[in-house]
Image (tube, rainbow over all chains, first blue to last red; front, side, top):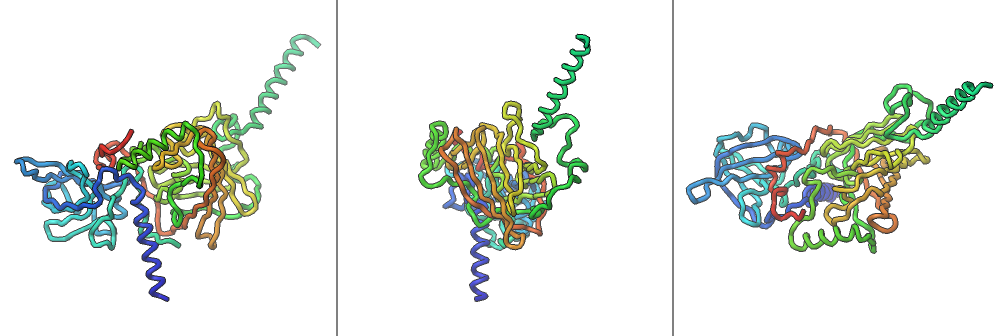
Length: 150
Length: 265
């Protein structure tokens, strides 16, 4: 019985987390792919309703592309272990992201591996991987994972 | 009686008549000079029946779909149908139609109530202040007996003008005076709202004050036939305060999902 209750709670929490993303317009993002890149942080913005990360990534043509990565709001990131100074301009990092379908640099952030070896996602308890779709812009809904359904 | 005296009497009568007319039309937006605002202590202190419940708190929509899906067999007007068809075409092509909310246009009523971010509510005897965390969108529900503003002078808005009253244990809110562009009843299906939108909410507090049930009745004769009804629920969240959440120009410059070329404007 207790197991059923725990399972039910987890299921509801999962659905709520999904609902925070499922509605948004991830048109243009390939939610079936995850790419891994390595580069140097250009900018990290800790802000509502979205944080974002810009990373300069070698493009194989002798130059770099700037990858713009859309992230969850700080309320999510804190629970995933982030602080506003977790990354800063000049840091060398690896990251995973859901990329654009058309091959342009950029996409929905999934996880980062820092120079000290730590890997951080953007939602708590989801193995460092962000849900497909990421968070929508202006209308982006960051639900409050700390507020389970009553 | 002199002509001058008669003139003064007539002038006074006109002034008094005008005052009485305006005083009987205490509209929400343009109240006559001297009338009391919702936060005026003298207004708050007026004797009124005790409210059946206090909605003060933070509320998070949940357990029901975020969007306001139209009922089975719904029929749109030609004005709405063209948006609906364009949205369907965009969706079929893997694109997104308009995406006004993503571009920082206010979600507006009724979506501002369900857009996942919590809504903080503060109830006074004269009014309820509702602030959605998303873009800190403000909605004021007046409970002090005023009426809706004449639509010919009202400043139209995304959240509209809300006037509430108590019917037994139910709070009934009527909202109108909406903008007629960039405002959607269903932003994914491409169902727009017009300035003829009229929303009636019937709010009940259940589960020992932990849950709100709101029945929505949506009417917009410029966009669809009949009245659409749906009921949604909110849960009280006591461990959460809302924050400042602005939709700023530089935000969208850094949002791949907004900059995507797969948007149909």
